[in-house]
Image (cartoon, rainbow, N blue to C red; front, side, top):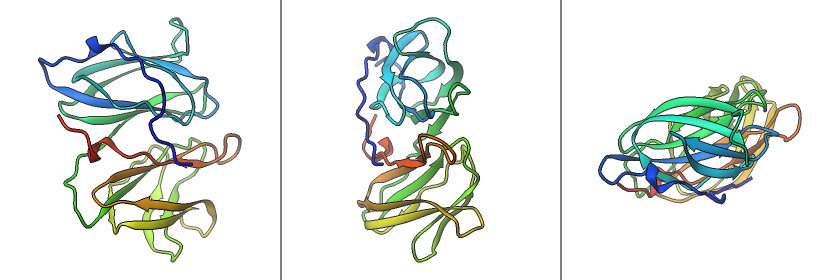
Length: 220
């Protein structure tokens, strides 16, 4: 499943300050079977009705302490979860709502800035399936890209030549393919993340989300 930022967002511009350093933040709902959610940062609504499998666009927010509350969409009492984190100056983040609903959490993921290379694309993998064991990421010719990627794990970016790829996700240390991702097209000088989401046993099933990371195009 190729999933790019497509959710409506309604963030309070008071969250942004042009007089102090900023960060860029997008929010992902990767919690299987969760309802649509509203997200508040430091008391202000920043995103509405984020449904499972969707990202918000990146929001430009003030750096520093971030106190997050997540509610069922349209509600402002009894938050589904609360979390505090710190947004570094000029940082780019994906705040991922994870865990099988209602046992949810937020995992801040740093969309790392790396120097672009005109000869390569950069691809990394993020394991957000709460009931899936550790996995290996393998090309069809059995070239190992990453091994033993566990839940909540985030790999480094791997530079790959531009072109079209098929990726197999195997249970770690075995030949058991649990997910095949065909036709990933990689453009030079772009940073992409492959988010493994869904459930190994249950519905919704395993799938991937492949957004373009903000480190490819955002500036301060």
